[in-house]
Image (cartoon, rainbow, N blue to C red; front, side):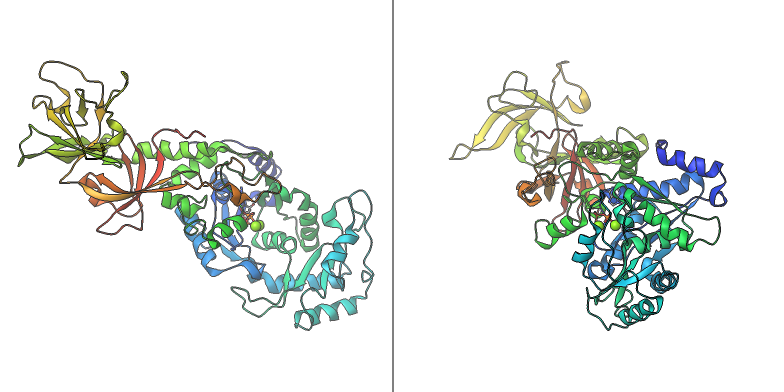
Length: 553
Ligand code: ATP
Ligand code: MG
Ligand code: MG
């Protein structure tokens, strides 16, 4: 695997280690909220967090950040675990749920109330937000800010028992209503929610806010470097403030922010991806057009290609947009090394070789992967009728068309030279088959008289062929930045031609050996993998990527 590129996070960790911080430990975590399937942006975070532990001989926790009961589900928990493992990472016995800390978080809120550092506010969220004001000028203190400790304890207890309705009361940290950092202006730490939680059921009526849970979980898990995306930079003083209230030694986790991954021609927020799934714009979270890890896997991406991509794009502090062709390059690069080659005709034109005996067939030998000799060779049956690609024939070709045309000659890959003598059409003038003759002396690259042909085409013996369905994918959106348009919904930019199903494809019999998700290169066409929708009667192949980046607008 490629060496990991150095980045500013390494520099920070090196400095912490040199200063002897946190007993020179490196302990990271990947903290998904189980409110959707993971996407390629999460993959970057996974590779980064687990990669840091690998580099520094440290550890990584998998933590479900499940503090918001209304959007979280067990299905998501399971898919997330499967995706992290598939990417090649292992949290071993370090699986945590933020919800396991609900009792400790509650006790910590009580502690802050007792210390006069938190209070119950009866105002609604809107009023609280209005009173926060603007960074330029101090906010207005809540009329409930100076309640006695006793009153606050009593009210929080009654909130916890379910005596009040949602929105009637919140608990706020008492920090500084004049802070230039808006997050320090008495942030809400607990709210009432009467929702069922996917793990704790109906046990709780009050739930901690994200900011009140995340850092504390880091602290209790012994995390040293808490990597998050750039939008949390302004939350860092609050993160540090809560940790300071908890600390009973020199140990302190450090929050480090990096820029999130954005990819062209797609959307990446779980909320939007969920919308695509729920409203049936795609066929589920693992639709091969989705930027989810499960979608990419089904599309034919390999874990290696995603890890290499993640390393290649690097880690920065500047928000930007990565071209999706960088991701496509990564998978092409990896599949070129590992994919079994086969011949597959996705848009068939029948060729009858009129001078080849009708009852004869023979076995030709083909290279499995020119990039990897150890993959050996395979047998390819040849007979009188073969399919070639429609696009490999032109009735009236330009001079530089080095494929088949009337009177022209090409080589059938691994086989013979054939020459087109007759174009057979139906009553509508549509070409239905070609009649060709072959040169029996031309097997395996030679020709009887030393003549050369420029064109080599792939083919499949008609009577041996496996009929298959092939799904060709294009970008899900036909706009580089579907999110970047004020007043236009991202769905307006969906590409109506993002899926094309070809149901009359013919593949070499070798593909009968394929198992779900196995990778192939259909020679000259692209990389494909076997879709789990396949049946014994009809295998289904997804095109992962074409051989070359030929996508033009
Ligand atoms: P989304 O907005 O897509 O729902 P999120 O940040 O709310 O993403 P989480 O489940 O909280 O999703 O994310 C888990 C981890 O993955 C977090 O540490 C987050 O910073 C990181 N992450 C999420 N999206 C990206 C991204 N696009 N690029 C890099 N890291 C990301
Ligand atoms: Mg989040
Ligand atoms: Mg989110």
